[in-house]
Length: 211
Image (tube, rainbow, N blue to C red; front, side):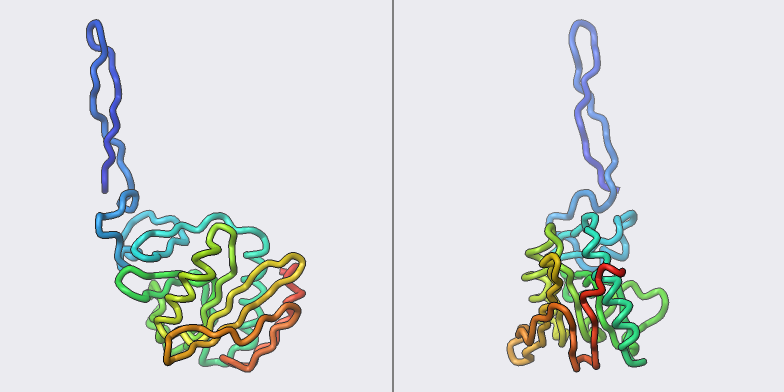
């Protein structure tokens, strides 16, 4: 356990005397000078779930709004119905993308062949077909800029970015450009999401409030 010191004052004769007392911090309370590495998420005890790692820093997720939860639930339900047997819909799983990168997509489609056993703590990027991020106010820059860049650089072929434009939902669909390892926008969808990749998808986005 890492430790942090604080100074306490106690009465001593005609004056006061400073004593050092120790307050214990969790192992992740103070990052190492060089930052954390991806494997630390598996060995640091007491990390609050969900925790992801971006550029060697631990990122703790704030409480989410109803839109965020409803959108993920709608997509998870619809994608599980649509997905062929060789694909799985996963959430609350991280993806190691480098020594200091281990983001956690809000939702992802993985290849069933990427399952390594019930105790696996993450999915390797080559097993991820689609990463989905639902934009939250506190994580807007990460969702819209840093995390898509990491997913593209790792070769994940599909990426969706979802925004709340109350009362509308907009899903920005991106596909990987392999030559540059960047995403290109292929369409933005509001009421209905109809796609042919990574498999046939037809989702009524107006049903979000039913979830």
